[in-house]
Length: 79
Image (cartoon, rainbow, N blue to C red; front, side, top):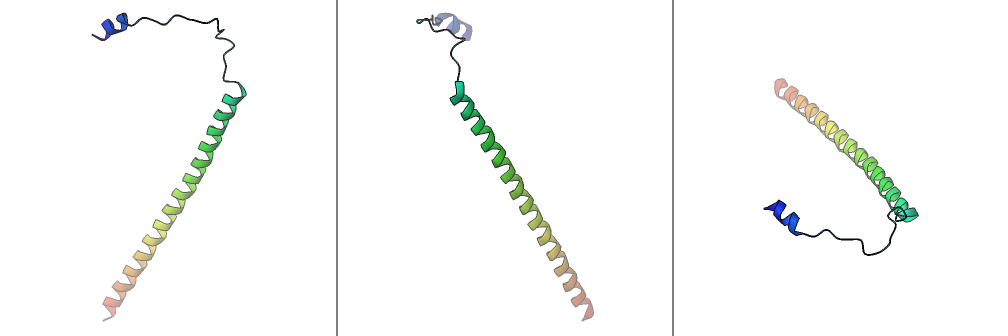
C-alpha cells in the first residue's frame, strides 16, 4: 500500500533557477550552531557539578546515619 502511495505522489520539479551550491546557512547558521554547542557544554558541566554535589551529600548523610546507629548501639549495650 505504501509503495502505491509513493508512486501516486508526484515529485516536485524545480520552479526557479536557484543554484543549490550557493544556498548555504552562512555566518548566521554557523553562529546558531556554535551557540547551541556552547550552551550544551555549559549545561553538561552544570549537570555534572550538581550530580557530584548530590552524591556527596548522600554519602555524608549515610556516614552520619551509620555513626548515629553505632552510637545508639553502644548506648544500648551500656545499659
